[in-house]
Image 1: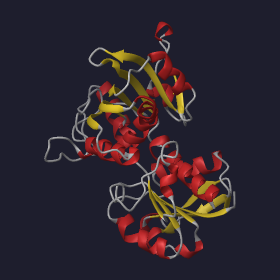
Image 2 (image 1 turned 90 degrees about the vertical axis):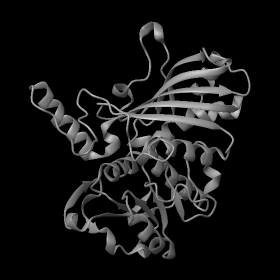
Image 3 (image 1 turned 120 degrees about the vertical axis):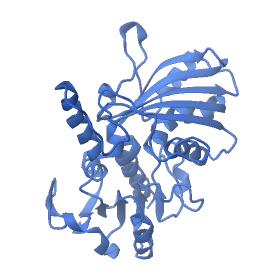
Image 4 (image 1 turned 135 degrees about the vertical axis):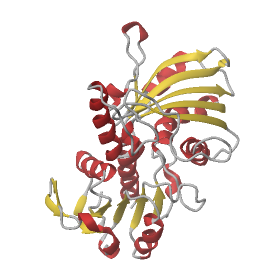
Length: 335
């Protein structure tokens, strides 16, 4: 692979820092590395394997000096800055939801739809919940067809960023001391609680987080006919999302056959030994590249044409940073 001039935007945030780690862990070919953040972080230094790098103002970046820009900044910022980058010939891999539903912007999971990148200079990274579920679902879709998908999630505090993780730890200590807990990041105190509310409620009664799974899965699979329902719940876990997934398939689906397919799928670790209490858990999935899949059984509702299983995945990695770097690898290999 040709060495690249890399820029990470939002380098001081949890996803930006993880992108930095993954780039070096995967030995990505780097010619130069520039780190960017908000104006208030300008001038600070971050230690990297290339030495200390000074943070630059993200709003003043010179994209002509970059080949690939990782955007890990939300809000309106990606929309304002993507045009600058593209016009300078810089490839943008955006981690926000800004472009995911734009029909002209490819939404990529490398294990599923790498060819959709084509010649695009702007590539969207999927929502973390979608990315974790999509890998096993794609294997079911390819081999057995999918009619219905029903997902219930158990999402970690880290899905709300570093401040969410910090709030959970602080408020848990308060709870254990018998002190009154509070909340700023979440809608309610999360310590020893769960909250069936992630992102804004939509007109249909579902939250935007839940609808992201519906919209994005259909786009990535290029199939609008799959019926999908999702309920997202925030739980007092620091890192790694969990999901219970129930599907109805077009063809009969055998448990042993799908287990073997999962075992031979890149990005999946099968943890399915109930006699020895081996199954996916956040504690084992955290900081791991592969997602864990287990509790695999035929559905009591859909019978031989149904499957129910449990997945856990580090949403900061496969749900964000790792997937972004994998997209960059595809781009570089293509070149």
